[in-house]
Image (cartoon, rainbow, N blue to C red; front, side, top):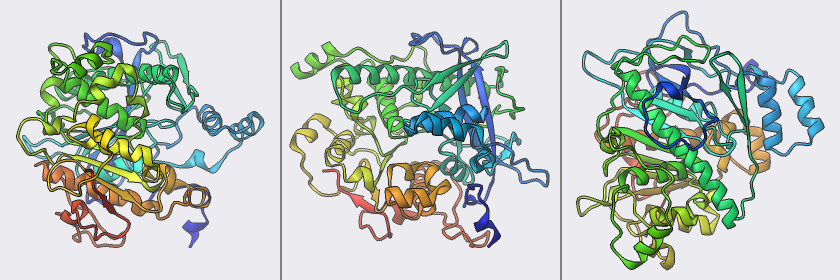
Length: 473
C-alpha cells in the first residue's frame, strides 16, 4: 500500500533469474582505432550505458539515477522537447520533482558474473529514438540482462537526444541540444535526417570497435565518473552473435547500419538500381579491415521497435532502401532472425505500416508499390503489434508514468507491454542458437518457475492476449 503512495516514479523488478549491473562509459574517440570519415569533428567522445549479469551481493549499490546529471539541464531539455512554455520549463528545472530521485534498479559498477572459463555473454546493441538517451530504455535492457544478455545503449550526439553533454579531458563539457525538425518529408528535412543518420552510423562503428578493444583487455580511459568493471573476455563478439536493436529513429538507424555494412561492395545489377545508386552517397562505409564485415551476416539478429521509416526515404538512401535486409541472402529460405514490433499507435498509421512491411520484405520497392499481403509465412522476418499501446510504451516512459500515458495516449498495461517485448526478443535469440536464461511470466512466480522456451510468443496463430501477429505479404 505504502509503495503506491510513493510519489517517486519507480521501475518494476526484472523478471529474469540473474542480478543486473549497470555502468556508464564515455570514451575518447581519439583512443578508438577507426579509419572512417568523421562526420562531425566537434563530437570527441562516445557515450553508452551497459546492462549486464552480475553476482548478487549484500552491499548492492542502486544509486544510478535514471535522470542524468546535471539534472536541472535534463529537466529543462525534456520540457523543451515536449514544447512546454519557457516559464514552465524554467520552473520545473528549479524544483525538486520526484523524477530526480528515480534510480535504475541495477547494481552500479558491479563486476560481471562469471559464465565459466571459456563461455561469454551474448550482446545486444540498442539505438534510441528521438527524445531518447542511453537511460531511456533501461527497463527493457535490464530485463534482458537479467536473462543473460549484455545490453549496450549508446547516447547519440546527432541532436536527437533532449540534451547530451560531451565530457572533455580538462573536465569541461560541451552541450549538444535537441534539434527540432519538421516531420514533413521534404527534401530539406530528409537531407537533415540523413546527416543525423551519418553521425549515428559512425557512432555505432566506434561503439563496436570500443567494445572489441575492451573485450580484448585494452585499457580505454573512461571519462564518466564511475569505476566500471572489466569487460575483458566477457562478451561473445563472434560472427553473427551481436543482436542489433532500436526504437523509432533507432530502428531506422539499425536498418541503415546493417544494410550499409552488408551491402557496401554490391554492384548494381539493373538499370533502376544503377539510377538509384548514382544518387546514392553512402552515409557510412566500413573500413576495409573493419571487424563489422565479419560480424554482420545474414544470420545477425535484428530487432525493430516502432520503426520510423521517414529517415530512410531520402535520395541519398534510396538505393539501400530498395535492398532487402541481409536475412534474405544466402540460402533460398530467409532466416528467422528479424523481429519487428509495433505499438497500436504506429500500427494504425497506415502508410507507415505499409513501409514497415516493405522493409521486412524480400523486395522492398515491389512490396511498397503493390501494398499487397499474401498472408503469413513460416520463414523470414516476423511482425507483431500490441493493442492499446503508444509509441512511448516501447520505452521507460510507460512504466514510469502509467497514469499519464493512459490518460493522454490511451496506453494500457505498460509493464506487460515491455514483458511481451522482452519475451519475444529472448525467443528470437534462442531460435538463433544464442543461449539465454528463462523468464518469470508472473511477478510473484517462485525462482524456479521460469519459462525456458517461449515458442508461442513468436507463433503465427496469435493466441497470446495483447500480442497480434501481422502478415508481411
